[in-house]
Each structure stands twice: as structure tokens, then as C-alpha cells.
Amino acid sequence: MLVYPNAKINIGLWVQEKRKDGYHGIESLFYPIPWCDIMEVNKANGLQMKFTGLKIPGSSDDNLIKKAFDIFQAETNTPGAYIHLHKLIPMGAGLGGGSADAAFTLKTLDTIYETNLGDQMLFDMAMQLGSDCGFFIKNKASMVKGRGEEIYPTDFSLKGKWIALINPGIHISTADAYRLIRPTQRDKFEEKLSNDWKELENDFEAPMSEKFNEINQLIHKFEEAGAEYVSMTGSGSTVYGIFESEPNIDAEVFQLV
View 1 (cartoon, rainbow, N blue to C red):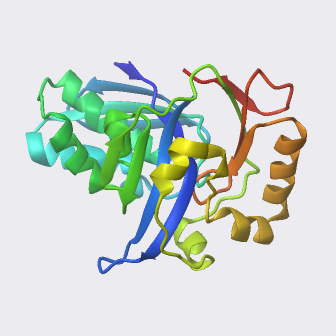
View 2 (cartoon, rainbow, N blue to C red; view 1 turned 120 degrees about the vertical axis):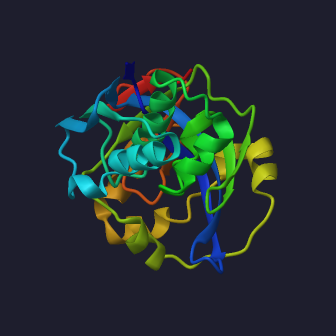
């Protein structure tokens, strides 16, 4: 079975103080975009994995796809799977590509083995893998709060607009990014989203731009190209611009649906 795990962007990302469980609370709008990996999942005896496309760092034991399979197998006692991932979404880029791969692994195994676990169980399994993974179970524009476990689908839409994205090839670990910001307690994120979403900012953007001049240069590039909204996504390093019409810019460009 072929599936296409997609990336997401953050429209606004407010970081709050660290919680008792060690995670920082956030408020953000997660929005799915059509920049996709390609994944083939079939029944098999034992786990067989193949990776092509962009090189994935680390050992296979640390891979989120393997961890997703292990969680699914422990719950359902399935015999195995053949999983081939062709990686196209950059890693450490704020796009959630690895989280999407893990969530799609769970959903696709549930489909091919007809285990009918339901969204809530798949969500609970996904949240064992990472804070962004749960979003990709329903994979719809959503307000995300807490450490990522509070997900509220919204009717916010950028349908018909165009998005251009550039990843400068800077791998930023989430832990390093959090060390560079000073969390603040704010409210009215949803009010800003409803009234003027273009005023929403990403708390990681300023410190990342200060540390990496390439990010600052990309922000200016999109502004000069006429984007109505420019932001870094996640903890970086990908920068994107939202346009009313298809932009003439050297970037990954998609129309939003």
C-alpha cells in the first residue's frame, strides 16, 4: 500500500514555561501542506525496512518508523511488515516529516491488517513517539496546545493560496532550539488567529535568525518576493512564505488545498 506522509507548517508558535513533566507548553496552529514523503507498507513476516532519498541520520533502532512498528506490534501481535520510505521532506527542518512518517506507519498498518484501532488509540500510540506525531493521525488544520497532546481541529483555511518553502540545510535539534529562547506566558492566540493571523509570530524565529544569518536572509527574500506572510516553521530551519498567487521564486512551491 502506497501512502504519502505530508509535512506541516506552524502558523505562530508561542512557547510557555517548562511543565512538571519536562516539556514546554506551546500554542500553535499546525497546518498540513502537500510536501510529502513516499511510503510503501505491505504485510510481511518480521520487519523489513528500506530507505531511499534523503539520508536519514542515526541507527535503524532509533528510527521513528521502527518505533511505531514496535508499538503497533505490541498492541496487535501482527507478524511483521515491509516498509520502504523514500525520504523527500528535510529532517530537523521544523516540518514534522519524521513525525508524519511515524503516524502514517501506524495508520497504514491499521489499514492493511484491518485492526480497526480507531483514531483515539492510534493517537495515544503516536504520542508515545513524539510531541508532533499525534497531529498527523487526523492531519487537519488544528490548534495545538500543551506539549502537543491537546489538538483542536479548526476551520482555518489557506485554500487556494500558494506556499513557497526553502530549507537552508541547517539541522536544528529541538533541544538546542529551546535552550535559546525565553518562554513567556501569553493568551489570546486564538483571538489573534481569528482577527489577524498575519500578526502571529514564532518564538523561535528571532533567536534562530540571530544565530544563523541564512534564516534571516531567507525571511528577507520572501518579503521581497511579495509574500503576505513569512515565518520560520517549528524550531527551524525551514522558512516559508504565503502568497496570493503562484510566486516566481527558487523554492519548493505548492498550492494549498
